[in-house]
Image 1 (tube, helix red, strand yellow):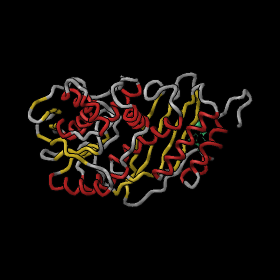
Image 2 (cartoon, rainbow, N blue to C red):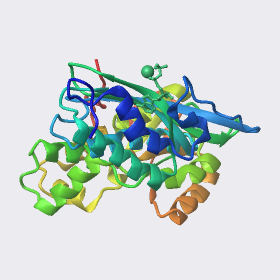
Image 3 (tube, rainbow, N blue to C red):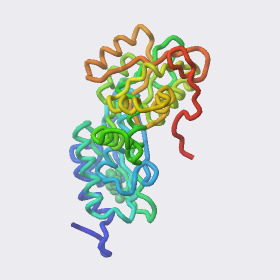
Image 4 (tube, helix red, strand yellow):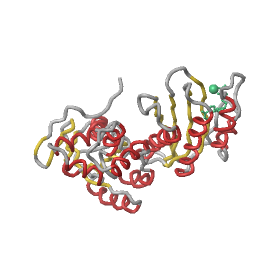
Length: 333
Ligand code: ADP
Ligand code: MG
């Protein structure tokens, strides 16, 4: 254990002992000894760059173990890269430690990053370290590569395209209910699985190639399926019809749904809830099958849940019945 004169861990110990090992092997990082990192250009490729910040008390709880907090921070950024069809490359990290972050907490944070770095094949390139009397705040910028001009944006959807979503929708929403102790009727093992998925989402990195090769537009589901589909529709200048009957659900979500008095409203809540970190995308009808096959090869289901139309807006259906939506997804102030 090292610490500053007042007995608290300091910035340079933290960088040297905890962050430098995470940059080992990345020439870009210059050993975390320089003022800046250097990214060598890759001819014929575009560098895709995305940032997400998380704040204690807003995105995670003050009691949450910091290895999980760090892993979620990295994973939500890798989810954005996956939605852009970008191969993960490296990341920058800015941390403002709160008073509760002594050595054990900082070590846990770095341990979590080390674990997921290895899992997803990224290294730390640089960042900044400060402290605050306020809540722990961290921001991570992830970098990935795509062949020049390739990879879907939110703006490429065209009328007639099919809308597909990966994995299962609504587990993030249910996981948050589980964290709040509001899933009492569900089996403890199921609640645990949902909470775990909420705390540690699975970025769809395995879908990078499929999304890049076959999707006309894509986004990751962080605000909620309905809201994120709305973002695609708006950016593309089109509309979308979403059929709740087709929503792919986990077994835990199906079990939850069985106890709902109004299952259609419950399905709508799953589609409005956020934190799924699935990929929602559009694909021309003649590309959708290849997209699904590629996803299947990657071991991830991609389900058709709707269609892009000319008329702007998001319309939600259950079969042929329109479903009213008042709450489309989370937004910060
Ligand atoms: P400056 O004084 O220019 O802000 P620092 O002393 O903050 O420089 O940073 C020194 C080195 O340590 C830089 O290479 C920087 O990228 C790295 N570094 C600082 N904090 C972090 C962090 N949280 N994660 C990764 N690298 C960091
Ligand atoms: Mg600094």
